[in-house]
Amino acid sequence: MGIRPLAMRLLVYVLLFSLVISLIATGVQMIGEFERRKSDVQETQQRAAGLVSGGMSNNIWLMNFSEVANSLDDMRTVKAIQYAQVVTSTGEEFSTGSYPEGRVISQTFSLVFNRSTYRDPENMGSLTITSSIEQVYSELRNGALINLLFQSLMVMLGTLG
Image (cartoon, rainbow, N blue to C red; front, side, top):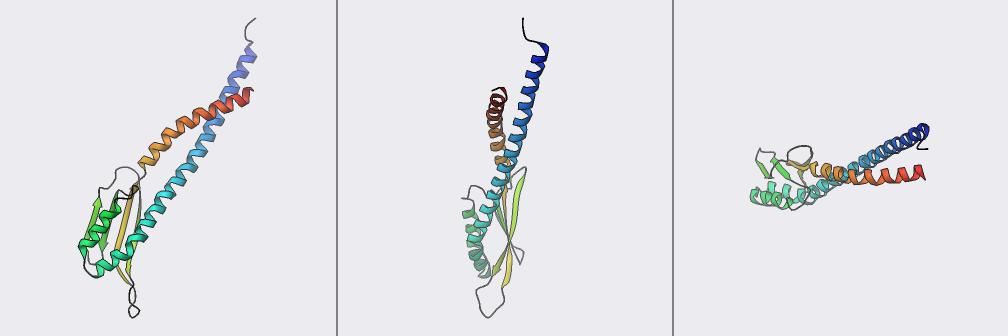
């Protein structure tokens, strides 16, 4: 006797439904994962800026520009930072790394000299830190395929079982 047409249609509908549910679940999970990784990169940039901004503003105040350049070079040891630039209030520019291609996260932080109780804080310039998020997209894309396969299998087994 073979498979009845109604049974075949129901089986196809069940499989399509499980595929749609898997796509939705994977999409929601990937959005959450991307936002988490993006905030990790931003937090890393903020921490790096917090660590070097006091010393940089002090070195700019003292006109010790070689130390400003060294501090920028030291920032490159952080994996998430591909490019950093300092622009002083007098117009000097220092940079390290190469500006990443594609989608980036870039933040600018003020460099404020505030070491004296007799003077107001002075703006010494700005520090811009740039990170590529292309690697995050690539890792998520690869993980999404494995995740989609696993979730499709689980939903299909749950639907058929």
